[in-house]
Image (tube, rainbow, N blue to C red; front, side, top):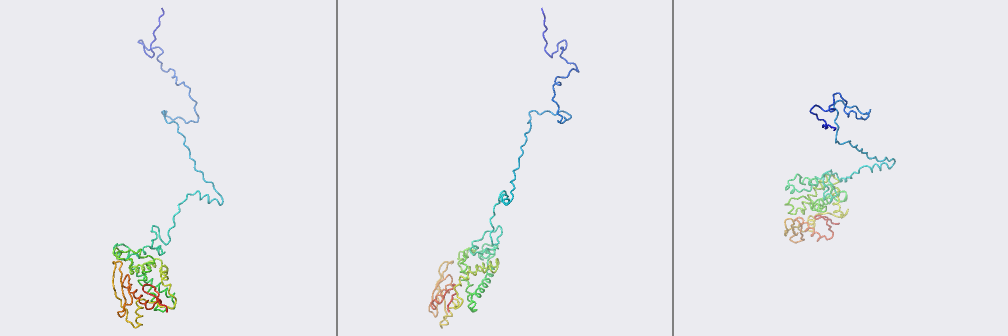
Length: 353
C-alpha cells in the first residue's frame, strides 16, 4: 500500500524547522518588480530632483483647461476723404446738449427772471437792486430782513426822473416858454402821474408791504405807488445806466403827453388854473369844503365841493381829499371853458389858444 504525506500549509514552520524553499537567503535574486519593462527616457524631459521622490497626486484635479483668449474689438475702418469726419463723429459717444444760459448777466445758480422783470422787459444783472426797490419800509421793519427798504433808491430815482422829463420836454417843445416847460415837468413827475405810471407796468402787484400796510390798502395808495416807481427807476439806473432808465420811463411819458401839439397851447394845474380864472373874472378865490368820508380804512371815499363867494361851483369825490379837490376844480373849469380843456393827468390839463 502506497503512503502519501499530508501537505503542510504554506509559510508555516513545522515542528522540526522551517519548511523547504520558504526562506530566501541573503543576496538572492532581486524581486520581480525590478525586472518590469521601463518606458524609454525622454531626453528633453528635465532631470529628476535629488532627494526624496515627490509623491504622486491621486484623485487630483487633473490637467488645467487652457484659458480662452479674449480678442479685442476690431477698430472701425479708417475712412479717407470728406466722409472721414462723419464716420469719426458717428463712432464717438453722443453728449447731452446743455440748455442755453439766460441772457442779462445772470450767473449760474441764480433764479429765473421774475414776473415783474418780464413785465417791464428789463432783466437785472444785479437782482438785489430790484429786491431793494420793491421793499417798502413797513415790510423791512416787520420782517427784520437784511434787504434794505427802498428809501435810498427813491431819492436817486426822483432825480433821474426829473432829468429824463426835462430832457424830453426841452427837446420836444422847443418853442415853449420856461414857465410852460416847468409846468409840464412838474405834472409828469407829480405823485398822481407817477402812481399812474406804476399801475401801467403792474407795479402794484409786486410791492413787498408789511401786514399792517397791506390791510390798510397800501397797494392802492398813490404816494406808495409813486415812491416805489421812483425806486425802480433808481435801481435800473444803477444796474444799467442812464439809457436803461430812460428806455423804461420814456415810453410811459410819451404815451401820456403824445396829445400835446408843438405850439398853440398852455399847460396848467386844475386848482391853480381855477384860481387864476376867477381872479381874471374879479371873483373871490375858490374854497374847498369836505362834505363826507366813507368806506373802510383801506378804501376810503372823500367827497369835496368847491365854492366861490358861497356859491357852489362843482362837487367831486376821490380816493383822497387832494384828489377830490383836483376833480372838483376840473369840473368847475370845464363848466366855464367847455371843450377847450383836454386832460393830461389827474392834476394837469392843456388849453388850446
